[in-house]
Image (tube, rainbow, N blue to C red; front, side):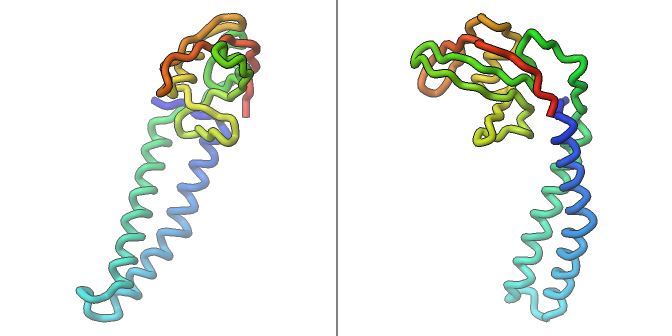
Length: 157
């Protein structure tokens, strides 16, 4: 079971609808057109159309499974005093005295450039459940980092 923000759930549902209603019918038409061009063994257009069809079907099935096994998080039931899904966390890396901040999200929402880290990442997992002032230790590729929680706010979007 994965938990998603309402925004991300809606984005995935919209992408799935777009693929099913618009992209896949065009892919089927392209495949039929390529098939009509004759000898399939030497038809590069046909092979490319089949590849695109397989990729589209694969993406549709993946998104269907994500939605099937996901639930939208109700921000009202999340704790406000502990790091949890959708928390915006400011923390200090005690090794480098660097202050950082991230939003904790599901793996399907992770976007490091946007300041969103997965709750399953080493840092996200180490921060989960901690309160302001507590120190979390995360095992990262470069070793162990110690992170002191400076502030927590609930970001519902």
